[in-house]
Amino acid sequence: MFIFSECGISEVPTSRIINGEESLPGRWPWMAAIRIQQAQNRSVHTFCGASLIGPRHVLTAAHCTY
Image (cartoon, rainbow, N blue to C red; front, side):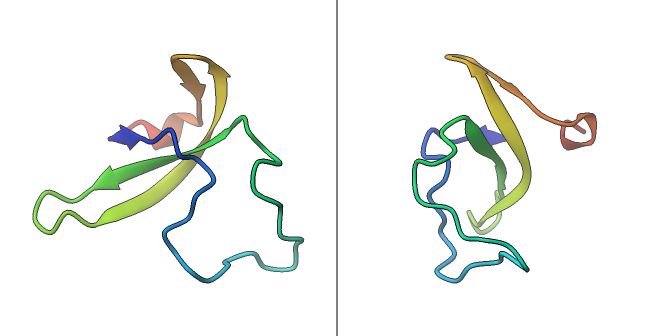
């Protein structure tokens, strides 16, 4: 499991926002993406979001940790 400090920077060039408003970069600085990197092909998949609650800690839902 990898937690990147570049939260909010998408590798996907198209938006996946449905019926919402696109946010400006840096508008939600406490948000993070939790990602996993596949060992076989080094591809990265974002599977959960989290909130930055301190310099070394994030808070996420329990189902994101197993």
